[in-house]
Length: 132
Ligand SMILES: [Fe+2]
Ligand SMILES: [Fe+2]
Image: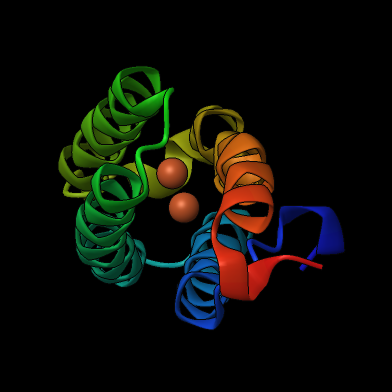
């Protein structure tokens, strides 16, 4: 994982790594034109990981008084909606035929933790035991 996205909170960084790995697995499965049920299974796993992760992150933002919480939550909602749509799209048994379109749609997954950069900066600056 790109070190600039590390929050300094092990729990969050571990979750981000797992999310990145599963997102990469989705992209790989689409590129390899894997069968729809394989792609679907990985997307469902990604969705569950994200839902749990966003709940943890939002609780952490409330506890520490992160000032941009509403905007951050909006991004979380958008991502979940997108991944929810992917879940439905991957139920189509003809998935393989549209793999170029899917590849384009799924490309945002490789940047799924980018938006946490400001949260990471806030955590390191304001949570005393994380201060450098
Ligand atoms: Fe995150
Ligand atoms: Fe986030």
